[in-house]
Length: 321
Image (cartoon, rainbow, N blue to C red; front, side):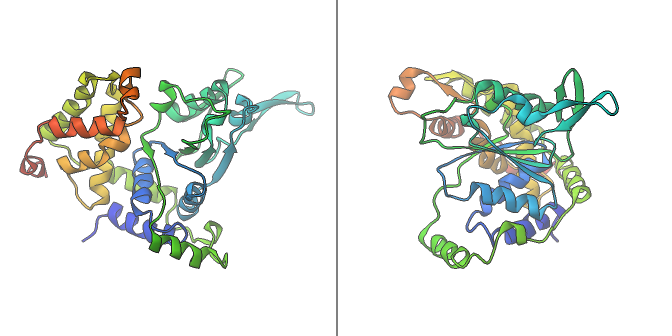
């Protein structure tokens, strides 16, 4: 019998797959992030379906959706909202910005200035915005999907470490294979299927129940220690200037719970941790100049760390169930 989370993942993937072809893994990762109250950074070239995926997810989950198009002239009040004086009441009235939605697509986030980028920090971490010394709570759930183009660098502002650390996952959709690309043309060529035509599958109350199911997924002592060992190992690799933080270990812990739940299990295996390690850690490691000159990448470092870190026996994890 399927768990609630697994059944939800299958239904969501089937529906979103009618619009965004061949991206089951990305859909699962987005759902995982939503269920553990994380956020996702999509680092990919234009035209591979990032915006369509975000819209299809929001529509399928019956959640409000807003899009922020980042440009160099974007200012914090464009994102958080602004207080406007109402002469009739002689009081300032807060008019919320696009952050006041359940799913917020921050398009080309690295085109915004650091000042505008920083306006997202409080929202992503604390689910609130502060304007004119007044704090305003954001909707629940609150989920940020940001995109950036890894190729086009002119007129961009690299995200600082603190901003990157707020994202649970860094994902790349990649180009579709030939069959999937042919399916895209068949579906979208006549322009008969759009994200806006999808039927809502879940509401906020259902998402809350799925979140609670993920929280109940058990992690045995051995697997929890495995997460600690992996995270700590990233701080002792030649060429790594800044390793993963304790926040990264917590992110890997929660992401592993979600991965197990989506696969229909009530306990975490080492394979769940391995499956999430790259997406959770790759943007949290920073290489020194020498390592970059030698062509090393953070995914290759994570592969190295996974290979040399002893893996606990799976039966020890399963016995926690």
